[in-house]
Image (cartoon, rainbow, N blue to C red):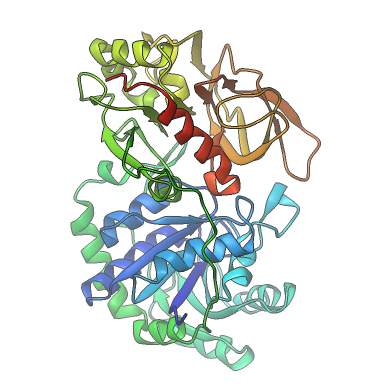
Length: 456
């Protein structure tokens, strides 16, 4: 298929990728383009910013989670509905697994999708040293797929000389510059950027950012570069479908406290025949009626611990349902919510749903983070004994009882540890799962849902 596409990458984190990506997305939307967006890697928050711009859910592209064929399929399925697709890279362009491999890096995704790449270079404190930096990125791997450059934090006076020097020496097009934008910054906290809903007057700021980029970037050349991408071949995988699609209803937590859910996980469940309904553990009084399954997504329950605790009717509803056999997937933040007690960000302990008789508490550093392959040590709801699924961990909170039904193994490293409460109707643990790394897990979950009586 002809799928106009382009990637925005950088030499390192902190180069301005997300800010510039959001500004370009907004400019494209303002021009009337039907736009799709994606984020390389397992990040949840950057795609949430993309989604606020384009008005539809953004996706993740991760070649640790999925092989090349599934990665192309997930991209092509969404890109086929758009006029242009913009992919934001992760970390430095070549940074991949375990910090020692280019596998699962932005460069790996670029090769998988055969996509033109625009390198965003933070030029603060940099002038002609830009040239050896570009030379290194172009020559480190071939083909590099790097076709263009955007110079960030550059003055309008210095830009023409840097553009001339770069284009004279390298087969690149410099697509413009971005001056220092002191009036628009994306703040961070312990799990990454603050959420889009917490940025005051976000849409107004995005419009101002887009207008600024229209002045300093050559967006027509950007569009032409995206349009030059070669045709992309992909094939839809075969997946099982319920005999009666829509007959199984799964409730999905979705609010300020529970918002880390992969778009493709939800899409896979729907394509298998599930009916998904959103609910809020913060604001609703009980679980939705007529459900046969429950997904408690990750997020920030620690920031809302007091409000979650005060919603006693919801806590009781979740306790009765999960302990009564309602199939439940609870990842990271959802796992914390199932505890007896949770230490909030304010250092106070609050009662939670009480499904797990343990406390969850705050640490002063990242406890475990990065990619994991999970091996089932027992027969359980999602996996048979010995079966594997891939995911990732990233959390500052710890539990007195992390579980022992799975072994988490770090890729390219020897480190491993026990985790997850895996039972006949429960997955509860810190690892976030990506269903397309083992679609059988999603199917087993739905079949388990189908087998239980409607509890609500």
